[in-house]
Structure formats: structure tokens, C-alpha cells
Length: 145
Image (cartoon, rainbow, N blue to C red):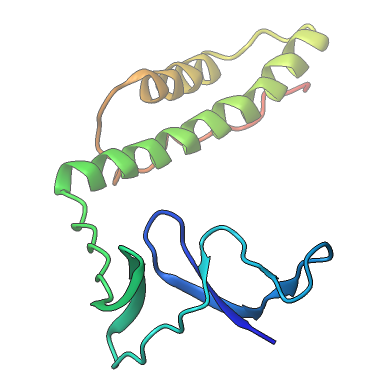
């Protein structure tokens, strides 16, 4: 049995080993898949990996992935504002039920509800703002709804 060693087609990094298969048409001939070799990779020290390049194995240092920089203050503020806007959108969507109940029951929409919804829309439509402020307070449900 012949041992074969697979490597990544792009990077050449060792992927694993397997036993070669025999050709069904030619006895004593092994089938060597693409990106494989019969040459064993070298033993590597900690922090190294075998890489097949130029027809031979070499030991290379394992690259350290780059660390993403921490978000800037502007990025953090933008994310917080986006979350705040989602909260305002949820509140506006929830208020739709109250408005529908007013119409279904022939109740005039109270001015406090119109003001509340206008404030929520202003938050949703703004590009920036202070996300530390509480959302507008939902008014009491209109009588008769």
C-alpha cells in the first residue's frame, strides 16, 4: 500500500493523508489524485506547517490572522443609533394597532398619539442622534378602543 499526502491547490498547505488506490486497468499502478503526492511532508515544529511548493515540501511559519481594529467611536455611535431606530420602528409598528382600533371604533385619534407617532417617525428618519435618550413614552390607550 502506498501512502499519499494531500495539499491545498492554492496554498499548498498539507491537508491530510490517505492510502492510494490501485488502478483497475493497470496492476501495480497507483491512482494519484490531483493535489496529492507520494512524498511525505516534513515534521514541523510548533508554529510551522508543511507546504508543498515547487514539487517539494517545505516548513513554513503558520501565518497569524490579522486582528480587526476596534471600532471607532463613530462606528459605535452609528451602531447604537441603528439599534435605537429599530426600537422606534417596533414602537411605531405596535402603535398601528391602536390607530386601527380608533378607526374601527369611530374614535378620533388623540393628539397625543399623533405627536407620539410623529416623534417615532422623526427618530426612524434621522441619520444620527442621541441613542442614550429614552424612546418617546407611549400614551395611554384612547377610551373606547
